Length: 190
Image (cartoon, rainbow, N blue to C red):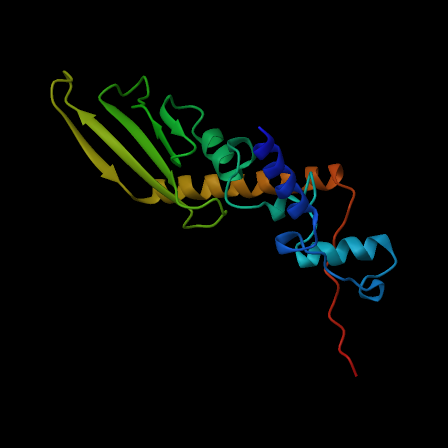
């Protein structure tokens, strides 16, 4: 027991000394501006600072929640009239069930949307539409993949909604976060 306590004491003394990874760095006051706003700005530029409720455009990593991803929200909003088989955010895919109108029971449609990136751009989504056509007595059915104007129209609709949602999220976040961080313009030295 004494050996264990001595070991803990030795480790704590070692960690409290100014050696190793905890070494104290000498800093000059002239390196830092006296105004708090400028110090905050300098720390943010150097990557030393952080914000608890930071800017929406300055998200760390690629881990977004489904409720804050504009593409995900726009896709579910666009496909809300169809029943979903799978909506897997972590897998980045939405698959609808077969959907048919009441006036044509022999034809139904299925849509799958795969997310290739979280950015709102034209190549962010892989949309596939499948059409199932059956005979009059519904005994034999054929499934064909259609990648034509309907796919492009669906992508365009999702991207438009996503850009509007992102714009609204940014405006909403601006109202909540009163701190404005503007990068200083680089002045040419003479």
